[in-house]
Length: 169
Ligand SMILES: [Zn+2]
Image: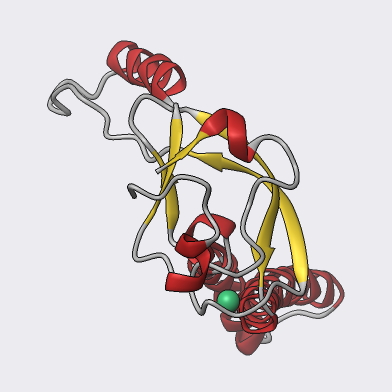
């Protein structure tokens, strides 16, 4: 557990990454969002309860600003490749969709164009999965505590722990 006011100031975090315990090659500023479990039954999925749930969601999300989180070379490479996969899927899907629609506007009767359009349409939301894998929270194995007062790191490396001023974890 790292208190949120200490991670919000640069220079308080260890020089080693949480996952691999390797020296940080890069420091990253980001906003860590809490995971939210939304209460309430989903049976009455009308507009009213939908709005209510959204409001509930907004009030329960906690965001902690993190400054200078250590990332080693392996972490950076992992993040870069997941984000590259995500953008390839998204922009590939978008290009397939837009391209096939554009070509379809000038030609007619080509069925494979429709298939390309559908393929593009399916690819774009799939980009969400690698995008989540490349997100900072997943990468470093951290989340906020339910009250939003501290950052919880899952299985931090020994090197990371050793440099914390107070490691009761
Ligand atoms: Zn690492």
